[in-house]
Picture: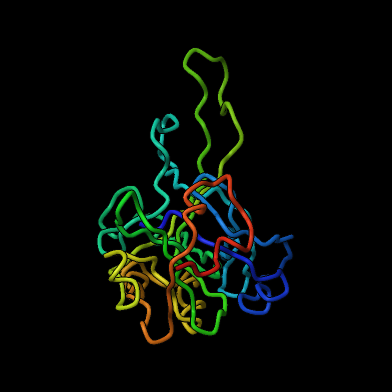
Length: 235
């Protein structure tokens, strides 16, 4: 389960890699958690081609459009790539509303004496990459008994990332990992003409040879902690 990640590359680097048509301010973040606002790359909702990319901030935790009331439990921050196409909660978004979540590293936890030991995984060259994701818009329905039509609150745009089987680097720590897309698939993933089946076929474990991992401080266990010390190796 990927419940934390880091995005520390500056906005200029993200623009060069993903080529959005707009700008957004980005601050280094070392402990991104579900329910927080996260930057994603997507085709504009009104786009007719695959070149109209934008970078926007969405809530990490998926709220399907058909939801009647806010969930009591935290919304799903991730979903298994193997079952998404058949899952009523995610299949429409997989077909029509795909996105990329830029990242520099992600965390996984391994059972250890006294608790769980967090590990950080990133590219060997420390280059940023992207998780494959989906997004959705949800508008709270009007409360029962209210007059007129419409909604009670503002529309919430949310997202989730896909997971897949762990590669050889992650396997000693966890059996699942985020689905990281190779850069040459970004365009196909975002393209409106890509079908759900074609998109699902892109979700594979990222090559182990390009990745590395190390233990990090248990401070990352709490979202209260931030800063560069969280990604440093510990013994």
